[in-house]
Length: 324
Image (cartoon, rainbow, N blue to C red):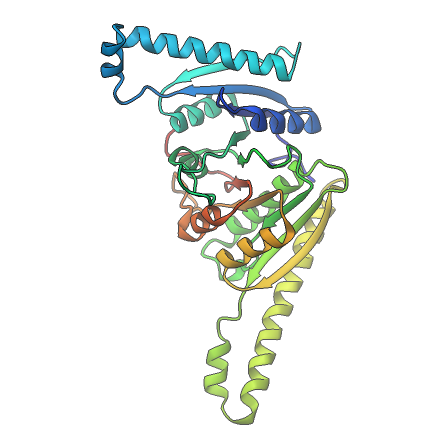
């Protein structure tokens, strides 16, 4: 695998002092796998009713915020010291809107991989992400791995979702490059022994009904079947070519297992993640070349919010965050 999105050099673990372990553990494992540097960051968002809280506490708002920051700093330092004694890893605390400050920190420091515990909205049992996580998925310029507490720190079974229908894409080169980055990222985090990367492409034969309608007679079923088989053969060939090109570019990595399933991406990715009991789903976000910002699209957001496992979102090459 070539150097790039799959081989991070500077990993940022975004932690919450109350529950930081999964982000720290995953970041440390990934940093050790690739010989990367590691940073730890915690965010303190000023409460919207800061003035009221300060008044009732008989403190100035600035004094109250300074106390919150210092308490958070001490808690995070204690967590890091307990998890990695003697490592010298510096824990930083920043104040402001979390996703904005995280993106700014990534840009300022050159971090090329972010790991954070996913924050499901309270009251929901499914993987419906908080606004901070949604903003990071859309706007952070580097890959964002949203982990869940029960997931393994080092994935063994990774599901990489790619779109091989490049000939029908508005920007085929952008899509082809994004597919490659998705697979690089999937291989890059699959560091466990006997790790597997299942490369999933959801396909469909959208013209099957039209073939039925216009063929007519006894040949309709045969023509429709022939059409579906031709589409499937084309996608199989595209998968073989894609994997052979990736494997030819670098040293051996985890085992790559091609998987083609017919159906809508929303349904296929959700079903296969459950069937495989995937430790993480890696997928790309949809972009328009030349525009700042990412258009993650309803399809990708629906997929992410339907998952019950961690997700790693990868941006296209050249993506520029709208926050920068």
